Length: 339
Ligand code: NDP
Image 1: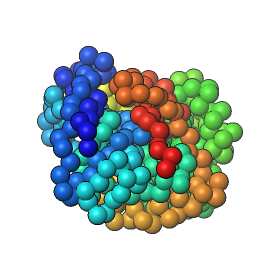
Image 2: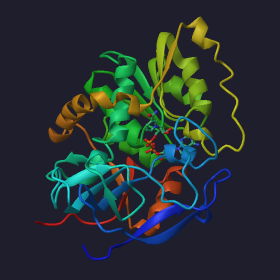
Image 3: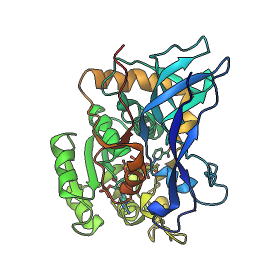
């Protein structure tokens, strides 16, 4: 192995509110020589995800904080360039948590092999990756079934667009909310949602009541805030809430008040269940088989927004909070070799 220089994105200060480019720097590092039992990987795609915002704060949460002056971490798809471990050979395609950098060295147990035949390979960060699995887990968590009326917020994003499509495949009536007319068109015309509305176009509760005059059975919450409050009002007796995310509050500078109508949980005997996708890793094979099958059969669309180059990764990340993505936001770092 000749000397390899790798660009990586480091956090240099903790954002206060919305992150800015000044919170990050791009640095060049020289990789150490490869040792026995190690694998050298070149990243092809890296993921930017809303949960990373929480890791940029100081202090302990359910995930450890990113360290200042070190490369950020996150999902990535890469190609093995050189291997001194029997488990991998050059040309193998792997997923890992070593995103935000061009190259890395890892032990085999830190890599997950995937098929290089799949196109595009970035699907392993979207519909067949962590965000797709989150959608699948959410539906299983509250046993979404045929006939349910389900409302999905953040519906045009990575988790939401897959959650809505999987709910349609289960025979549900699906309603989505998202932040622009272009996204509403995408939900109705490409994802098969029954109804969709733009939450910026008017009060969420009014629009939800119009879309679901008889109420909803399930709410898949990706955003929290006003939308959660509206869903609590629209849910029917024995309704269920999948508490997946609350992006509307991720950049808040002080804790946000909870919904004013939480008492609906009692009056309507609602169930609200939180999920962390990483708790379900023992069911990853089942997820890959079911959802991979839908994808290969053309029943599931993996929409993505691709930004090119590691120097654009920070823009892509900030763009999540500005609604710049339709489907999964990914950063392309290179092409797979043609061997
Ligand atoms: P998305 O692909 O949905 O990207 C973020 C989207 O959020 C944006 O495109 C934007 O769309 C929307 N958004 C941004 N700011 C706001 C706001 N203030 N109010 C409402 N919507 C907003 O991200 P993911 O699909 O990766 O994640 C969706 C949610 O799922 C997040 O809350 C995330 O934290 C959560 N999550 C939870 C996991 C778990 O294990 N619990 C795992 C993975 C994700 P728009 O134009 O519609 O505003």
